[in-house]
Amino acid sequence: MFTALVKEELQKRGLSFRDAAKQIGVAHTTVIRAARGDPLDIDNLIKFCAWLGVKPATVLNSFANDDITASISMIIEREPKLAEIFKQAIDDLEKGRISPEDLSDIVNYAAYKLQMSRKENE
Image (cartoon, rainbow, N blue to C red):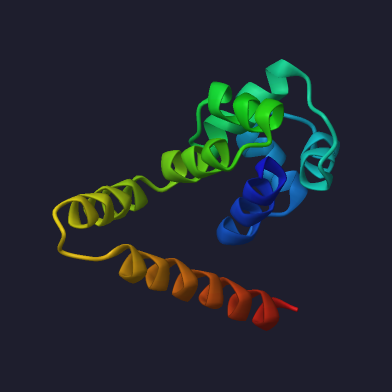
């Protein structure tokens, strides 16, 4: 997940490895290694986390647990608006305003959109 976030941020900001390295405060080869999924030392990991807007503990948990909840937590930290959407969906589910099937439909639609996005980027 961390590697995907690094790649996404590079693309989103339209940065080269060298430009990103200047922003992060690391060597451009470190950015290349992070985008490739190579391990980083803790000092560089902390710099990347600051640049990405996520807590180092969340990233480390995602590595340690390979857990979906850790990955979702990392995404929510980067995009706080998503937390509100998740909270609203859970609240609506608990109050009976939507059914579990409705929530499943929402998730399936999101999966479909992701799949279409991947095909467009290929």
